[in-house]
Every structure is written in C-alpha cells, then in structure tokens.
Image (cartoon, rainbow over all chains, first blue to last red; front, side, top):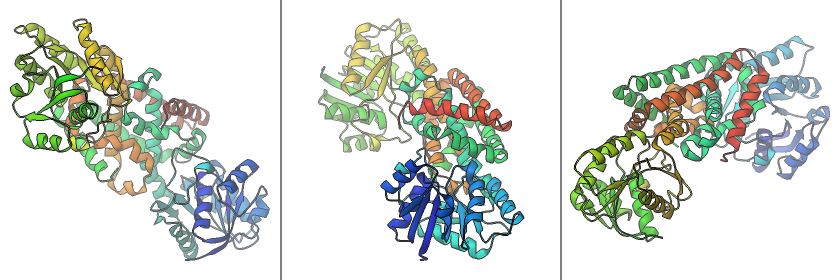
Length: 285
Length: 285
C-alpha cells in the first residue's frame, strides 16, 4: 500500500474531515494538511484528529503536496482545482470529491490544458458516501469502508494517475469503479439526485399538522430533505439535463401507479407494487 | 388501568401479534385468544408468546370475548367484524386496525345497524405503527409505545365505547388521537399512502445497474417499497379519492422544483429546498 508523504485537503467538512481521519487512522500519510478560509473549521478538524497541520493560506497548504483533494462545495471546485494547479510547487496529483462530474471535469481540463503549462495532474472522484448530515463534527474514519467511489478519467487522463487515485480510495476501504464523467452523471441523476428532488417535494407537500400522523415510512422517504439546500441546489444545477431526464423516467413510473389507482385496476396496481418490491428487496435494508 | 378478561385477536400478523405480546407483557388481559384460519400462523404466534389460547374456529374464539380486535388485511376487515358481531355471545366491543377508515367504518355501521339487532359495539382504530416488515415473527411488545393510534368514532358511536378503546390503546403505551374516519383518511393519504406510492414509483424507475451507485439516500427513500404489495393495493384502493387528491399536492410541489431547475433558477431552487428542509428538520431523525 502506497504511503503518501503529504496529502492536502482543501475544505474540511464531512468528506474532507473523514478523509483526514481515515488517512491518519490507517497510517497512510506522513502529513495531512487541512486548508480552509475559516479558522473555526480548521480548529474543529484538528479537534476530531483529522489533520496534522493546517493553514488558511492555500499556497502554504499545497506547497509540498504529493496529493491534493478538493472537498469544497461543488460550485467552488473548479476554482480551487485551478488555484491548486497554479500554486503547487511539485508534480502534485489533484482530485476532487464533487457529486457531479461532467461540468467539473470539462472545466478543469479546459483550464489545465489552455492556460500556462502546469505540472499538476487531475483525476475526478466521487465518493458515494454522503448523508443528510454535514460538517466535520460528523466525520468518520470508516466513512468510505465498503462504499463505492467512482473515478472519472477522460481520454486526456494519464493511466498512471487514474491508478494512483484508484489506489488511494481503495486504501481507505472503498470499492472503486471507473466511469466516464458523462456515465457517472447519468447514473447518479437517477440514483441520488432524483431521490433528493422527490424527498424534498414530498417533505414540502405534507401539512405541518399531518406529521404527528406519520410513521417510519414518511420519515425514511423524506430523511434526505434535511440535506444542505445550497449544496443540493449546486448539485442539481450542475447536472441539470441528466436530472430532468431521470425525472421523466420517475414520472412515467409514478403515472402508471396513479392511473392504475384512478381506474381501480387492482391487478395492475398489485403488479406495479410487486415490481417495485422486487427491485428494492434485492438491495437489502 | 382496566384489566380485560378475554381479548380476542382475529388475524395474528405483525400488528395482531404485537398487541398480544403487549397485553401479556403488561398484564392487561387474563386471556389473549388468537384466531386464524392458518394453524401455522397460530403456532408462530404461540412461539413468540403473543397468545394464551388459539383456535381456527372464529365462533369458539370470540365466544366470551370482552374485546375483539380484527387485524386482518384491510379487504377482509368488514367481513370479519360482521362475523364477530354475529358470533359473539356477550356484549363484545369490537375494533379493527385497518390503515384506511372511511370505507371500513361506513360498511361496518351499515352492517351493524341494518341487519338483525346485534349486541356488539364497534369503534374503528388505526395504530400508525407499521413497517415494511410483516408477519408475527417481527411482532414487538413495544410496537405501540409512544406511537400515535387514531380512534375514529362517528355520530353513531357511544362515548363509553370510544373511551374504552382509547384507554385500551393508551394502556399499550400509545398516544391516542380522535379523528372522524374522513379526516383520518385525508391526513393519512398525505402522510402514509402517497409516500408509499412515491417510494414504489422511485424504486421501480431505477435501473438494476444503478443500485451499486447509490447511497443511503436512495435506500431510505425507497425502503417502504419493500412492503407487501397486496396489503398496499388494498389500502390505496380503499382510500383512492384522498390518495389521488394528495398526489396532486405532491405533484405541484415536485413541479415547482422541476421548473426551477429547468429554468436554472438558483434562488428559487434554494428557497424550495430550504422550505423542505425546515419541515423535515422539525420532525427529527
């Protein structure tokens, strides 16, 4: 297992903090450097033991980094990958953890291949391991254990770099898969972004007075509506076309159910509910 | 706290079994008699300790019952309440645990007040305490602790009977609320039945290959799609009008989100997601 000298984490929230904790717990890095504009975030990350060093100055933070991981909200990722590429003094490998990839990866490649030549190399990542919680206080060294992390190379990505990033996530316990940024976004629209839209629409549609008359079903179905609105606005907007298309598929499925109910078609209703149950049962609790 | 002499449970699944276990654990009944057409269900209910006696013969089962609780699937409730009313030899109080109430209560009242005079008295109940699991093997003596149970009297119901049924559920630890059958069905359409439709539609719309690229969000959102299809077909069909109406409200909420996304309206998207988060956060995990 490769041991890194210096890994720099830009943005120390739930994901950044969990990466730091996992690297330290597993002894995978000599130095884990946290960078944030907010001193209070760095203090909190130190408190949970996610970092060995920290700084509010990006240049200092990335100076000697072998690996830099940009863990900011989606909307800031391109900007920070660009800054890291310009400021890094060694041949730094850069990745990010953004939940959408095509919008990010296209812009980053544009930036790296159009400006002044940079020694930095970039591979996109997405650890599918978030939750409705956020903030470093929920960081967990085992957050990536057994979870899928997608790495998203393009024809421009060097194979050595993809392999290094894949090995990095595997060392944190992850099940690493490779997809193109486009494939990633189409799949995640259906498996993550549409469920968020549906949960939010549902939570919002239930009258305040109704909640006491709800059981685990409504709670489960709407739990992710508690996620950070700004984070999710960014995710949805940066994967807009795929989300709108996946919503069409969901809407067709819902319409079939609604129409079977409207025409009191017991057999069809039973059949559709059975199809849903089979798919869901296959996944486990 | 009233101690019942004989409580008869017709249908010993998750809810019936949990009632039996709770009565015995709390010492609230001298005899807990289980009735089922299937010997294997009665054996299972005995094994978990939910019953003191059991029989496959309804007449024997309800002969001396002070209280009879019909816990069959929704579609069979009216039939069994009618049978219990005819077969009961004492002034038996009857309730049921069906998830929809107007369809059931109307038919039961029609039955009790139109046929030959019956000594039996009826009050509808709905313990909001199910789950995606079913069967007596998941029965739990604490299933009703802290959960809302709705009792649904009508102008024809005697106040003493409502009070007795309310006291029964309160003794099992429940938070008892009174609603008319109509009010109950309108509220539950939004808080329980629509979430089931949405979860099923979503589970069904996700391609098999997508599931590995999902996290807790999709699992939570679709968990109740694992519920029993026949049970849910019956619930939806017996509350059809309210469910279709509540689906309209949900659909409006979803459309606002979809349209904000389609026109790239970041501010509106953020606002709608924030409204959803506020409502969901107020409920707790």
